[in-house]
Image (cartoon, rainbow, N blue to C red; front, side, top):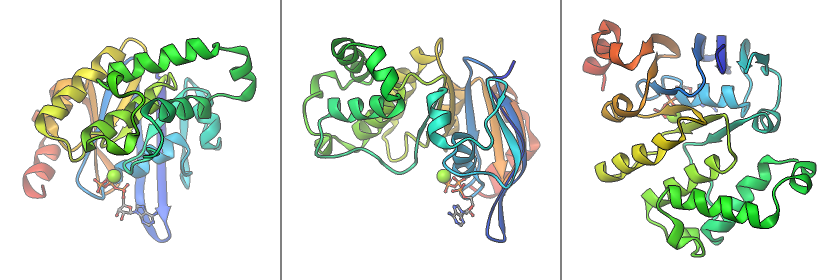
Length: 244
Ligand SMILES: Nc1ncnc2c1ncn2[C@@H]1O[C@H](COP(=O)(O)OP(=O)(O)OP(=O)(O)O)[C@@H](O)[C@H]1O
Ligand SMILES: [Mg+2]
């Protein structure tokens, strides 16, 4: 069974149609790339999946359950976590406290009371900071991090919620080649426990970490399949050679 399925998704902003009849599915423990030219609807699709906004028609199924009409916080509680394209780090708070807030945002008050002790939660947060190379800076304010480190902190904030489905919108935007490579290495160990849908412009990055890919063009799916088939697709070649 697919972990996530989008069926015939259409999203309009006023009279403009940003997504047209988009369908694709992602299996468990899969890293799935979402690519396409600027304005092709990638962020709109991630928002529709996470519930940040609703589609006009079509359905989103998560673990076989129809979540199309569920608000974002409900989808988050059942295991989705989204990192937006725009930063959501609180610069005056420490790295540790940014993760603590993210962790608590995911859980209901009952779960917080029942679940981990404060110590167990602290330990998990430190593991997540270390996973992204930020352990030694845990108690420094997030605002003094470099751009790349802030991006890693944000990914860590999504990861610390232990999502089954992690949605990342251009997490490597503005990063150096070296930082992009490190990001791929930080993400790889999550595969046994997490499905990832990642928006990314760098095709080499996608080829390195993704098993499957969906390509959007003007709100429509023009390719859907294994990453290894991407280079043979005439449609993909057409948009990447003529427009980017
Ligand atoms: N809130 C909004 N209101 C009106 N139009 C919007 C809104 N958000 C996005 N759009 C339009 O919908 C289209 C798809 O936008 P979207 O942000 O999903 O593209 P994208 O593929 O993520 O692009 P990029 O690569 O630049 O991040 C674009 O034409 C954009 O201008
Ligand atoms: Mg976008």
